Amino acid sequence: MRDTFVKTLIDIAKDDRNVNLITGDLGFGVLKPYWEQLPEQFINAGIAEQNMTGIAAGMACEGKTVYTYSIGNFPTLRCLEQIRNDCAYHNANVKIVCVGGGFVYGSLGMSHHATEDLAIMRSLPDVIVMAPGDLVEAEEATKAINNHKGTCYLRLGRGGEKRIHDKIENFEIGKAIKIKEGNKVAILSTGGILDQAVLATEQLNKKGVSTALYSFPTVKPIDKNVILELANKCDLIVTVEEHNIIAGFGSAVAEVMAEEITKARLIKIGLNDTYSTIVGSQQYLRDMYGISSENIINRVLSSLKIRTNLEYLNISENQEIYDMINEKILDEELSVVR
Image (cartoon, rainbow, N blue to C red; front, side, top):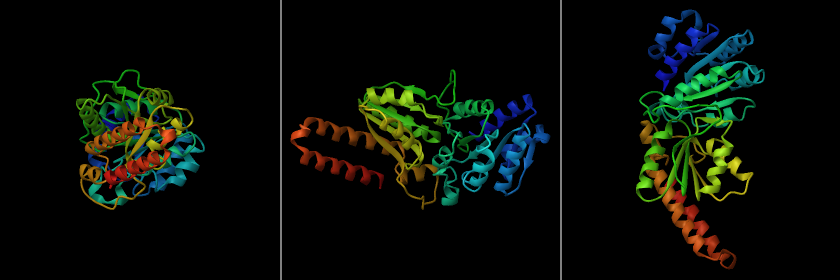
């Protein structure tokens, strides 16, 4: 994704000399083509992300479109005050780019695991939050935030992500993308975890579970229409994110469903309100924290099995049994997550 972003940004910046890129002293291999071709539109702010963001806000106030670029939590959590006070509050035309969302830098430990960024960035008023799922979404998202006037957050993978889409027609900020139709289960995914959601969807359909798959490259504003349509058609909505389930993508979907009477039950798959204390490859950490394709499949099948048992009962006359089964659901799902 990061290579796609840089190539797209080079094209954008060549056409618009007001576009500038500021890095926090990294990306020399990846960013080299940019600064070689556009040296007057590039700044290395050094390992000083707060200054980087302040500089970007000042340049934006003078009519520039400024991209800040760094690893994981560094362009977001380390300089959150500057993003809030200098950029978002003034609706400055600053595009904050995180390379390495989720567990991309898994071997570097918790400090480099970006697992709260979506929640924090979407809590800031008027900030667009985007987490593309593959290379095509990354390209389209980069173009979209460039055309949007105001502060945006773009969460990227690092490299090696699979290409899921051949192309995307009419990409828009705030619109989900349908990948697979289904009427029993709907899997909603955001960010680089999309490849695991694709694998899970394929296997569930092979098992006879009609499963839809939608990618949400925009976390804020969320696509309410698609969520409500699926929640009134399917029995189960499953959100998948390489992020904490508290206040992240799953919570955004839950907020939409909570405001309406819907048919579906919601399961949120992500880190279960915990810090990542393990190091290893991205896939290893996905396995360990229960967000791999296998875990998605197990959670869906377990939930559908219990739901069938509940529908078999006359709940009004068997409240005690209903409560016991609900407790069993929770125990089984927590054991899967552990």
